[in-house]
Length: 474
Ligand code: SF4
Image (tube, rainbow, N blue to C red; front, side, top):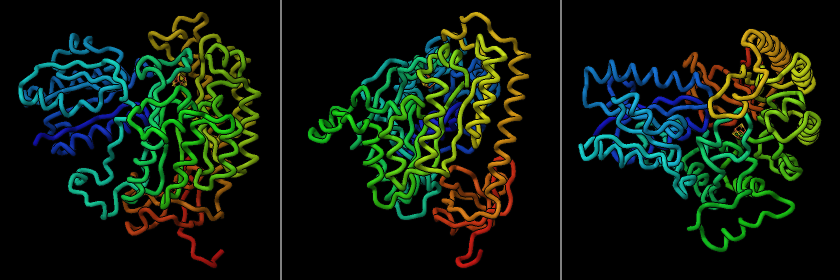
């Protein structure tokens, strides 16, 4: 059977889509190639969030066409994901070596299309149409890597954490973001369907599940797409009660799964944090003390230009409420620096918000105009030099706060879920605290999947180092 290599660009959603496509192909008998150099099929799962990400994927495909194709003319080359969706046929027109272009609602057709191309029945395939129900097709996992197709479910999986896609698309239309165009309108899977997938993962040894979507706090707000769900259940789910949003109902249902230890979710939208979700943090012990709250700016004027739908005050109020119910909560964020029209005063407000919240970490993005977004056409684009300088200042602030927060862990005991060997030093093991901090420690494979108490001995740059704590020792 042919072998496949998938290279993924961009966000966690893309990682998850690639995993599902790889698992679907493995189930059909494909093997996973260790490198593109030996694969029969090379797929690039692309990102469109920045022009740079698109250029990188196109450059990569040009190299593949020049190198891999030259030596092995039968290799199949394909684009999938966000750039495939937004550019479609144009990609084959520009790069005639490309055989397959697969949009964001079409991942589950990868195996059939590849079969057709490999068998010579079709030459080129472009499929970027909308497809009803596609939100429920990202469900396969590769817990055992390449050996998954022989999996009997009893061996310890390579992954003790798993991502579960709960919805696709976004209707928010932030003015800098291309995602609503590449991923389409919000479409949510039914609760029963998601719970069934989570249960199966837990039965296979998964201990922590991250519920995944472009805007998970909007989960189910526009109904559910899966008509084939058991009628009674589905009808019940379709009625968001006043007290509980569909997302909190989903959290409740996943929380009931026996054997599941931890629940996370990403990405939420700050405006989607209603009191029911805050209350869920107080009520559901498996929901860990961690929140990724993308604030984007500390200035109300800029937030309005971005079409974010909340104010600085509301964001700060939300942080306060979360800390009231979970004082140890780890809060991370995304911030865009140098959005069109951002003045020095606006930027100072972002700096002051970062200091006030004391984020555990922040992902900073220097604004870059994205074609087909309203922000790209806005007046007062901020010169690159100023964007760089502000990015630098904010980064210093974030690093300084982060250092302080990480240092505060030294000497403390904390629970981690052991995920596997450290990527940087495979002789050591790594785990994650409930508040989402990575801890590296001297351990062994037998620790994988365990909830372990560790004593933190040292803090590095956004990493903690620890020793497994011995009971009774202080
Ligand atoms: S909430 Fe805004 S930034 Fe997030 S995916 Fe939707 S449009 Fe993009």
